[in-house]
Amino acid sequence: MSIRFTAKARRGTVALTVAAGLVLGVAGCGGGGGDDDKPTPSASASKDSGSKPSAQEGQSETPLAELKGTGGLLLRITSAARDSGGFLTVNGVVKNDGDKSAVVPPQTSGDETEVIAHGPSLGGATLVDAKGKKRYYTLRDTEGRPLTTTGLGNLEAGQTLPVFMQFPAPPTSTTEVGLQVPTFSSGTIKISG
Image 1 (cartoon, rainbow, N blue to C red):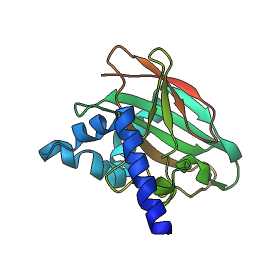
Image 2 (cartoon, one colour):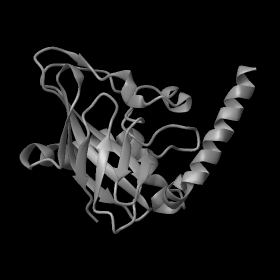
Image 3 (cartoon, helix red, strand yellow):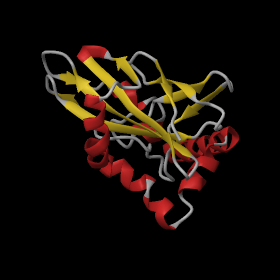
Image 4 (cartoon, rainbow, N blue to C red):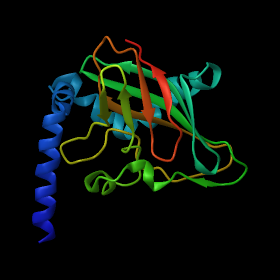
């Protein structure tokens, strides 16, 4: 019976995704060749690619936004750029700004069963386009994995972790969006590209 429920929930999620227009964003980044490789490796390799340019640049440049979390956690957003595949990649760094070890709360994954099943992530993050009156959820692959940094856990005092989140790109006329991550304060970020 739980298998049927999961299948029904999956069909409902897909139907909602289609209705919200998110499939276009996913289809745009899965078209083949270079685009197909781009988002999927980011899910596992973005820690490396994010730590090279984004984390270092984010430490020396003024961040786009700083969102304060629980237990001394701080999320610094270093970039928000449109990609040719029709999606928006938000890069940043989670830092334990406290003086003792802190756990990234599991609520950051959101409350969707399929996303939670893939472990701790930033899958609960959303972008809000106040001008266009739309909310954008993190993209998911065909198995329900969020296209965000995964495997979040404990951070020691002062420790940083490069992170990323991918969303469907808002219209090019939208240059600012609100970023909401569960358990963190909200912030406004400028979109480049």
